[in-house]
Image (tube, rainbow, N blue to C red; front, side):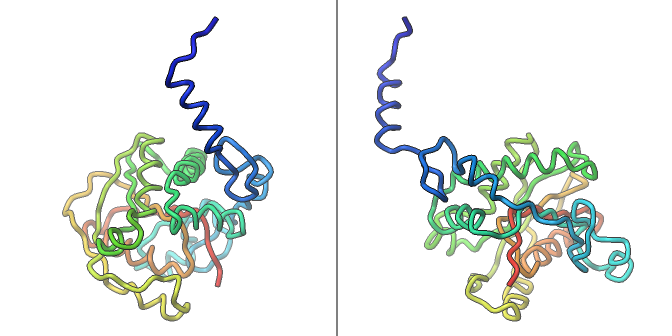
Length: 240
């Protein structure tokens, strides 16, 4: 007969006292989404980040490469379309301090990268969008972009790099109009290193709307090394 330790008894008691629920439908479940809610996640179409036309794995299409040679990104990879399911997960991570949801989302990111035949993961590093220290300490307590990147790097056994810092504590993008978002983050990021060994950097974030953040961070990294290939990996895209 298998002996049950004091720790096992405490774990069973704790699980009954604080059961894990699906974050959307509240059904008791081991994990953040039950099977039914997972089925409601909608994959985002693979599009060119400039013209928004179909493009394999979200790479900048040939036409846009020729007409926008200064665009800093090789492509943008978007996991999900923005619906109520993904909204609940992102809000839990971003504003409700349930940072363990980043493990579930990072695993989905890892699955996506492992099926992406256009990226050689042998020479890739993971990075993230920096947040201003005041916002991190006094408002959020942590950086959700860092949490996603950290978990993704651990799953894929890739280096995690801190490449830029945010010099100015800007207004939240959430509170701004589309036009205001385009200027809110202008030139607020600066590089904090002078050397990157990897050929490709994948910047991880939770949500994109106007591409403003991704372009500003990518330009910051390009100031370190113009030849570096930068790709963006986000959980979802929100159209406004």
